[in-house]
Image 1 (cartoon, rainbow, N blue to C red):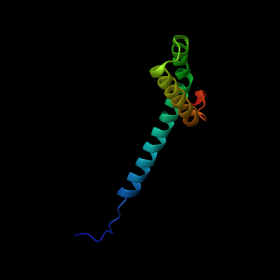
Image 2: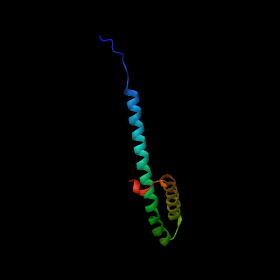
Image 3: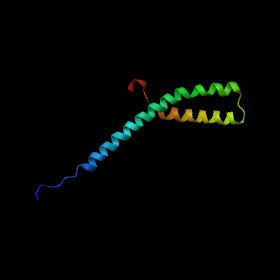
Image 4: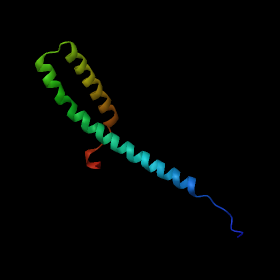
Length: 82
């Protein structure tokens, strides 16, 4: 047996890895939401041209809600950051 004190660097290393993974995930989520907010309005046209009847109205409202969520999450993404 040696008299070298035991140091446990594992939790610190794991914490750093988890934080890096979370930052990476958040960044990619913001990128995806930014581009979704740009592309989602394309779906408005076919719904509006065809007229909003029962199911189409629900789809239109859902699409607008998703677009608002995507705008909120991805609003601070700068395309030059990618």
